[in-house]
Image (cartoon, rainbow, N blue to C red; front, side, top):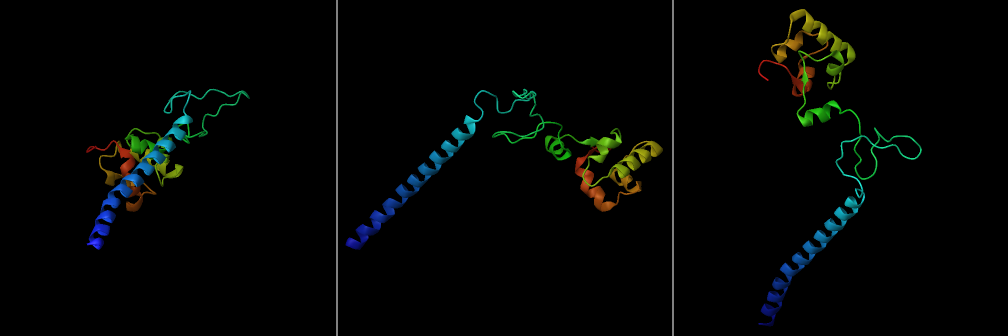
Amino acid sequence: MRERALRTNRDAARPRAVLFLSLIVLLYNLAAFARQDFFFLGSAPFATTQAAPDRSGASDAGVGTGAQGAKKGPLSIRQKFLLGIRVNINKGSWQQISELPGLSDKVAKAVVEERSRVGRFHLPDDLLAVRGIKEKRLQKILPFLAGFDNN
C-alpha cells in the first residue's frame, strides 16, 4: 500500500517538474529576446535607409554591426535567389551573368556572344552550346536563371 502511495506521488510530481522546466525555458527565451531588442533601441531593426556617418565622418555602410550582423550593400546572387530574383539569361549583361555560381567572366562573355549569335535561348539545353558550360554546370546555375519560354 505504501509503495503504491509513493508511486502516485512520483507520477504526480512529473507533470509539475515538466511545467517548471518549461517555465525556466520560457523565461530564458524572454530574457534573450529582451537583450536582443535592447540593441535596437532608438533605431528600427529592419531599416532600409543608409547608415548615418559616425563622429569620425566614416560611414559603416557595407559593414555589419551590432546585433543585426547583416551586411549592407548590393545583394549577392544567393540572396537574390532567396528573394525570388533571377538573372534573365536572354537580357542580362555579362556582369550579371558572371555573378551566377560557377561562371567566370570569360564564360559569361561567351554566353552573351552565343546569345547575340543565335538570337535568344529558348530552352536551358541551348546553353550547352556555349563553350565552358557542360551539363553539371548547367544544373548548378539553372535555379538562378529566368528568361526561358517555360518560365
